[in-house]
Amino acid sequence: MVSITTIILLMLIGNLDWQQRRIPNKLVLILAGWAAFSAAFYSDISIQYIMINIGIGLALTLPGYLKGIVGGGDVKLMLAIAPLWPPSQLLWVFSIGVFGLLLLMLFINLLSETLLTNTLSDNRVNLTSCTLKRGVPLGSAIAIGALFMSIYTYILS
Image (tube, rainbow, N blue to C red; front, top):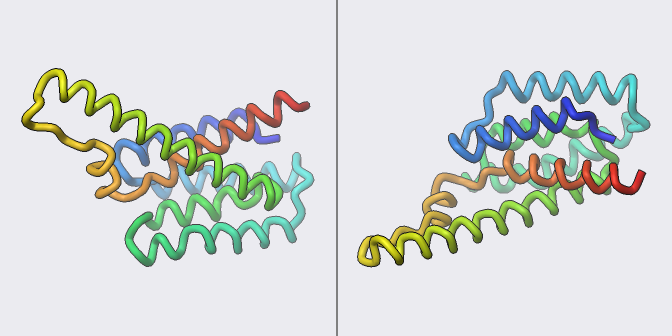
């Protein structure tokens, strides 16, 4: 199970990524150190799982990085969280997070269209497309996925 410290760090990173489309290296380094410490002393995650997770993280983020869809911070974040979950759960964190992020962006788009239709019908702006033009906030998706996975794991235990 992931600690509350990890969730707080991921929520902070997710918020910064959402607002600025930037993930500070210092926060990724702190998270990576905390994840390594947790894996070494409090986790059943083996070095083999961590290596598999590194491969998964690179496979999920490098294509987007090479196409300019995600930033380098997103790639580093996926590597930093490698020690936190077994591979199947890491894939769930990523999948749930991306799905949750898409739902959030859809909700914001619908809300903005409703508000703008009521106030400025001639000057409508699609906030989701503006948001996507700035890149995909994968840090936000990972934070969402980690939060949902932690809640799910807590409920089951």
